Image (cartoon, rainbow, N blue to C red; front, top):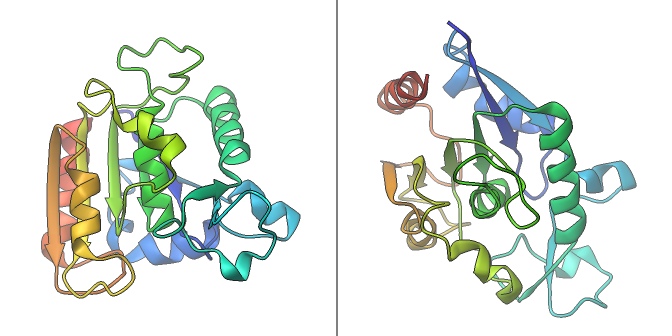
Length: 214
């Protein structure tokens, strides 16, 4: 049986390698189910970090005064990230699903808004995939991106939302707000903080979810 291909999106100060290590306890037993494809944000090639910086205005230049996207309003770097990912999907397709952690989870939520429900690419819906998994995610706070959450058809896909009850980086209610945009959210709570949970119960539920997608 053909394995799933899952695009994996790292956090704000992360990288493909960091996320691979973070996910390993969860996914090491799932090699028969899925190929997990890890990528660096395009900013890393330029000595920067993150998929975007949330800043007060587009003239801001100091990333240390920015944040992953929980506060402020303007996502500096989003257009470059969007165009880079559209190109990645075009050249490296197919991806059956996406996985994101922290800022990467917020990004995964935005990519769902860019997906085509029927798989037909268009200017506004250039991506095609069928499910999403998020850990420590949140809604984008940039007002210009609010429209991406508007299409209920785009968000009518199976999704998993891992939420840490002790998460002090992304509050659990922020993750629930992201989950509420999906028509079929499976919420997996755990007692940990801002981590990718890997307890036996979580692993079993993620594995079952992936089997269903196959």
